[in-house]
Length: 421
Length: 215
Image 1: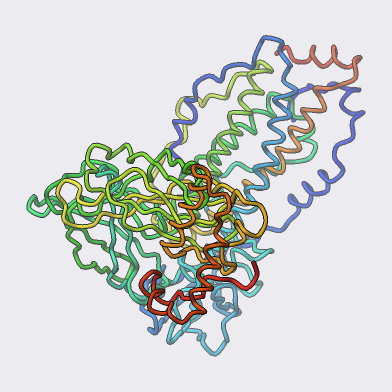
Image 2: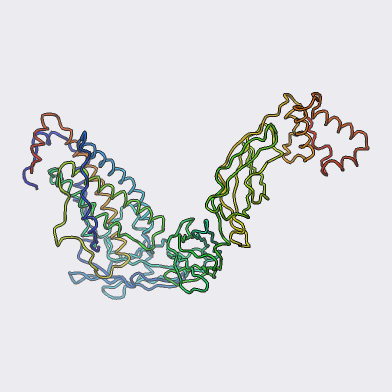
């Protein structure tokens, strides 16, 4: 006890937490398991076995009072007592165990085989590692961000579960320069991935493979040969802006900037735009946007909010013949098309209910023309309704069939007119 | 359990004392240390659960109590009640500091090759938090004017290779390390709660208490 530092009245006046004395005393009073002088040794110690194989183990007791005996000893495996018929007393101080047709280890740290004394205390233990050697890893795929690094992913071999801890090592070397390198940064994009952050060479192919190793053996994947320039990806285009095109109700203009990291090399870059209406989950994709940094979306619904995203493929970088890898989509940008100018059913209501975002080009252009006419010419009586009335009249006189096919895209005759106007 | 190479901990740079400007007193840092022990206790519960499941039954069974064979070098939290109550502040803090220094060292050595990447990450995260607790305790000691414990020459814990350590024995050591960590955190909460109460005594007792501090 430390000498005399008791603040007398102050300390004793305070009540200690009531739980404390009880629990401390409990811990002090707890009987210590295995405090007897007997110990034992299990053989084999921490063996590694193939699934389905058999094991013969022994537990040999020794202790200070001679007379340590195998009487009353028993085995447990992963906490469960093993049936006595599997055990056999070999001699006065040794108990044997025979296990057959072992299953894969319950946990990768090894099955816990324990030898207990009669009173249940633990005398010794051994970890059993039962599993399979690894299979060849497959499906290696790699990509390089802006030609600065390389990230690779792979899939473990066909059966996956080896029941043993399996270590994967990604190796790579330049094709004609000999020296093997090992990737060091694992699990960057999932459990079977690795990232090589620097010192990558261009213009010479790399050979890449994955080695899988566990206690029972190892396996090596096929070698993947690739050129960094063929697997380049980049950041999504920054600064995506979506804006209206004057008063046009069915168009939006999208502008973006070439991804800065590769901006000087992206002569042939391809872009893709996707857009959707605010409360829809269906994206429409505009696919063939080559090497421009703007695009006009047409055929949109008036008075609607659209979300737009753009992504980039650094195709043909440094003369690579292959398509690169698409970047992630840019953050969604939103904009709305102007509301249709005419109030009432003649306006936006003219747009067929079925949502036909791909209205025929003729119809679309006609709408734009009429809109322009209204502003710039004295044709106040012109309206889309007039056009539709004309078309209805044309259909009635059967002469229209041939004429329609000449004007409108096929299959659209009469379908554009929704019942309710 | 193998002794641990821990020289790095003993050579921690002197922890700067708390803001002297408008010195709020050590009460705030004691409170923070208390809060940290509770937080760590909570973090450890989930880490220990996952780790013991990784070790597999019977290690993750509730009443498991294996022999404490190799774990003799672990700092023990259990202590006689009267001894605990009568610890002076300096000793109380020193015991905490030394205990966590050792425990952190062992925890860092708990580098189970076979553990999943996620488990290794959780362990690393916990080690960082524990390092934070050490820093916090050091802060309290500095605020109260106590020197950080330095090892005597010759008693510095160093790594000594022992007899080949079986995997099962290692599992038992891991079990006891986690248990001892749990017990220490639980005890530290009580230690810092006690210190906290001491720092807010009724006015009359203050002078008495401060007088007792002059070593």
